[in-house]
Image (cartoon, rainbow, N blue to C red):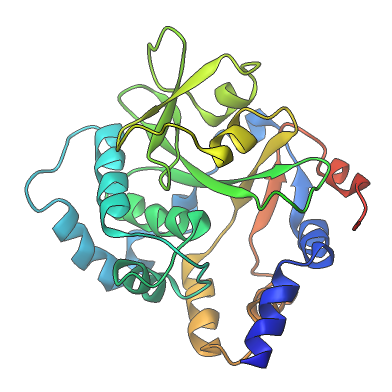
Length: 269
């Protein structure tokens, strides 16, 4: 119990936050990231079988044809069957089972399992983090996704944990993440699950000029599943992630819109 409390405190300490971003971050551009997606590192064959079992339940009654409609269908099912809670940091199938059983799951957990469902349904997908520059410890960060719609011919931002899409005021077609973050706050969001009267997190990360996105690149689900399963809570989770970094199999954070070094201008106070 004491080790868990220490691990929990360290995971949220600004020093660890800074260290993770120093080690993993790279600057990039919109054009360089255009073709990057989770599917490039994760094929159908490496997705655990439990995802296929749940996928049958998701599409038990019908399966839409378009990529966006399928993505919305997945997001709705997850939102209706997962109440959320504490962050998990577990192997992907273990995390999915825990979330369905009501034992936790934050936005990053939701984004990661959504990635796997997209892969097995032939939807190109990628995961984004959103942080505040310079770093401010009162903001916890947020995770969201994009899917590539073959029908529309573009990336579309879909926030799975909130079940929202974004549009310009004329509401012609849903926006990509870059369109949201370069639109000078002229976009609006639409909930396809339920009406959201007020959500501080949406305001903090989608309508905040200090917020900036970073792509979670080169994440290999099978690698993290392997070492998270081996760990089985023996060591604090950051030890596992640091080991994966040392053996050269870690993911990266790629910043296309701002220099990631700007987040380090704040102090720990």
